[in-house]
Image 1 (cartoon, rainbow, N blue to C red):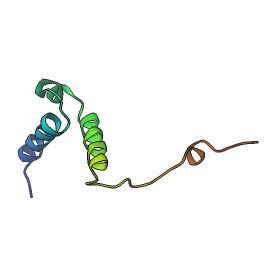
Image 2: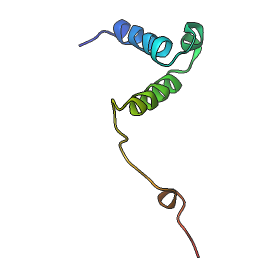
Image 3: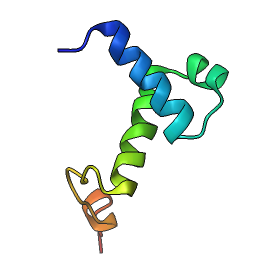
Image 4: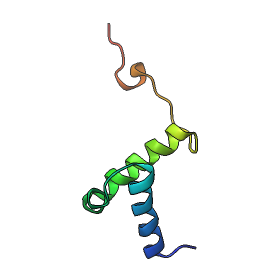
Length: 64
């Protein structure tokens, strides 16, 4: 199991190298935003899949 320091270093690495963000921006970015961007990157590269696929009709039901 990785320590907290190793996990944080890995997130900084992901932010700088894979997401193409400057290191200072990654340091100042809220953790939730960094994790969201990393998940989008993983889905785009095919590493992860979308957990739930929704259509617009699922989100906003059509009322007649």
